[in-house]
Image (cartoon, rainbow, N blue to C red):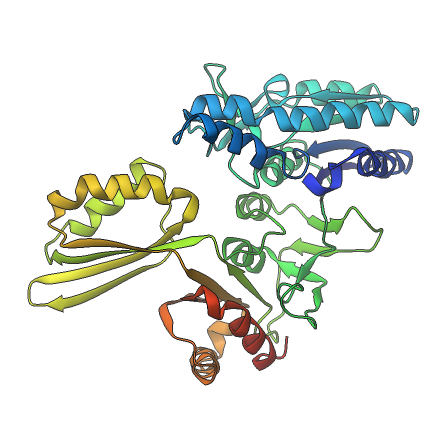
Length: 400
């Protein structure tokens, strides 16, 4: 007998028929001799709808109250699935994150898990129950409800897998694994059977939406195998685990259209200017992706950096407050950009990869705004209108 944690995304619990299908899969896993813990997202579209309702009342909803609102979606999912499991004759019980004891920090809408109490879950598993837990949410030491950010249910699933020492965590979505590129853009994209934590983390951080990056970090830290699968079929998906194949040049492509580029122009070239800008961003929990620094003329510099579109409104306020202090001439926002990333352990040991990327995009007439290279990733910021052409050309170039 093993312990399996199964996480189901919003499309998997979108309606009664899907809930019944998930309930059957969960019960089948239980009957196969496993203890089962299930983590659920809100029904597809519900979190967006709730956020929209909040913004109809306030342009900048209070984050604590927004968290109070958003967690209701997951509570709908867990109660309905538990009812469906009961209908199939199995014992099950649902818990919110607060009831379980998923303790987080105080960063509303972007909280991070500090600890998980497993006593209540283990107690119910020992009495033969299937335990259903709300993903995406937590509670602070002061009993305030928090949320983990978009995609946070993946993090809940993996964190529970770690805390419970699970044999495997299965992440169910509407796709059957990780592909060499987005199948919606590239018809001949291939499913990847196995991928390393490092490669998966880079793909997830670069826009591949199949698995949240924080969940990959957790799995890698604790060497926990994660199986990415589709809840719409019984096919084997993609296994995320340690190790890699040295003969694989590029494993896959990821992209994102949810970034904005900020250009801070003609700032005095003084020590501490960049430190001030990015310290102020950090105070507001705004993550910086790529940074470009250019000397424009004697004594002046221009800083360009990439952030999430969801952080743009707050970032603009921070920069407007800092503009006079740092002596910037202007702050320009570019929203029509996209990010394309190539990921694979072969990048480091093959110097020609970077040249091939430049050549391929140049042949397509695509200009690169910013480029960044690491041991296993090459990331390019380009115009959003060129995204599909870039993905197809690079996928073909590297024979993915």
